[in-house]
Image (cartoon, rainbow, N blue to C red):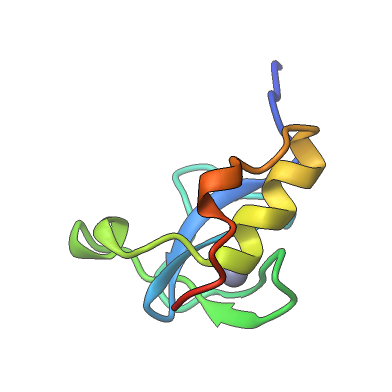
Length: 80
Ligand SMILES: [Zn+2]
């Protein structure tokens, strides 16, 4: 099976986080506790609306590092 990156994205606790936890077939059940790349313990949220949440900055930076892709310079503002 082709796995492009060792992590997957999921909406949880108000943001889109990434995790290296193994994703169950069919996706994360609602309320699953997951350790995100930003080292937060988050609970998966399974809804259409949840996929429109903003990407967690900590997970985004760590995902870029794991994938070996530098962060775009324009996004280094550090604002919330
Ligand atoms: Zn995160």
